[in-house]
Length: 303
Image (cartoon, rainbow, N blue to C red; front, side, top):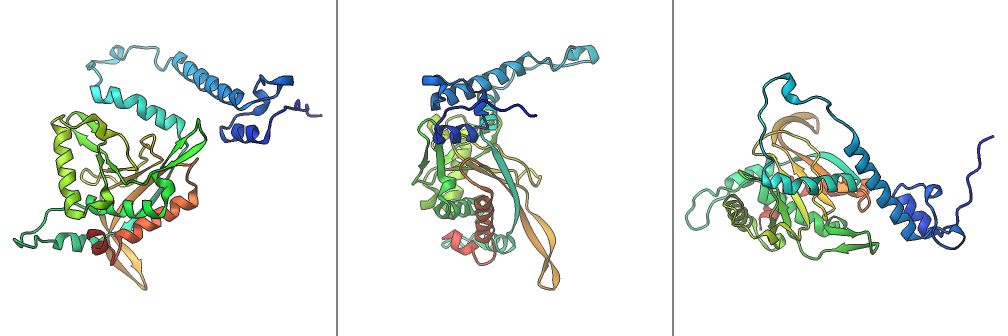
């Protein structure tokens, strides 16, 4: 016969909290009268579990030999920005239950429209990358799916919904990765967004950007299109709950109607916090992006 578990006294709310954290309530020592388990008991148990896991990780020897035993090596200090970003990335990856959905958007019509843009006064061709269009598409989706423009407050058990649209842009600089924000992206047109991106890119490169510009975002876009690659798993920039990864667009043969056609397809990788966003909503958000970046929508994004 299987051993029966001891009956634990706890309210439905406390039991739900334990389930959400993946904690076995039968392992939690209750501090209340007659061993009743409280919310604080659950939270303390989770903190101790995380701390114990971290200590266990530190105690494991990954390599019992020096690298120099096997050949010539060069030792360099970790760059300052990587030292700053490292703990934040580790915290985000270990604390947030990431889900990444991959999709592709047909941007054939958008690319034709983008490359046809000219200055109204001079007639000169405008040099605008796809990124401003992607920003506008993300803002449009955030308005329809506000869960993506929120932050989770675990202590107060609340969701904070932001009424502003500040989009983080992951930038590869000579100093390392920086993620400044495009403030009020919903109030800027395509050309204004293009100018803003160039402006903050130069500030980051020259290390003249205000540190405050790295905080207070709605959602982040990490675009590798200028470098290459397709799908990847971008790490959510806490306290945001989602990030969009963008790969390099590629011409592919796509079956349309009853024949194959050449289409420019843009790889999209959407990571989101599964505590806030479920799979169905993630799929709808991706579909919304596909539609916004697709046929007949590029012009609407530009104005």
